[in-house]
Figure 1 (cartoon, rainbow, N blue to C red):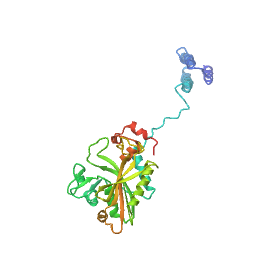
Figure 2: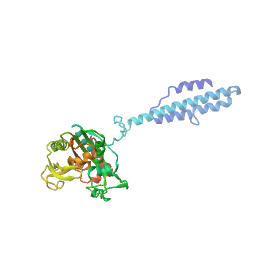
Figure 3: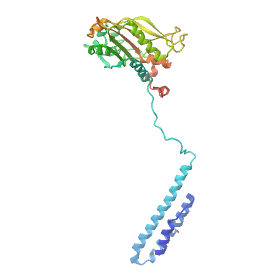
Length: 340
């Protein structure tokens, strides 16, 4: 009996099979009802009582070893089948995590800030909820100015007036109050106005404003700075023109047009067939604004400008509906993947 067990233990060390069917045949040979291991259990009756315990342990160990060996053979065929599967290409890269893209407004914002940083401007930011002083009064807005009407401004509270800022000019006031010139800064941020949402307007939008205050700053300095910006943002062939305008906080004031980059100045529905597109407002800082911020207008002069990031992005990427920037449509946002 012991010889049979020893022979089977040696035999199973060298078991092989060429297929899963072969493994199943080995299982039947050793473990089926009429297999070699169950036959050993039938001989259990003829074993002397004092040997039954040892014999039973040996047979159970033999059965366990056979099961483990057959499981190993079976598993080897699973690995081979996966490797040979026509649906499994071992040369393919692993699944990649989908990388998001920058929002077009973030892309354009960074481009604007990058352009002005090359000519010495640094960035300053401020709160979105402002007092009447920073948002209006320090900037020469009279008490009855229409911009302060409830139709244009979101008021948080009254007496004292606290508002959602309508422009980032409020940050200019904060900087001028606390900084000794020279000042050369840009002010990016989100602003709010009570307007109907449409393809060309929204109640929330983004601005970048700029301020330069120093001794002997002139309108010519303003023109050259904006000319540099226009060419860097829209291309070397871009032309500019300045038209007179009015803003309470600048005098003289102007609006900057660029030659339409869509029709190349020949006329289209974007430029209303004029060949020109307005991109920003600008002007020399009003002396009273300087005085309001405790800067001596007899010694210092300065210029300021402000642009909507959405408008610049619409022109740069030829987008015809401002609402697309706020809808989080993946199909729209994926178009900017890889843009920096």
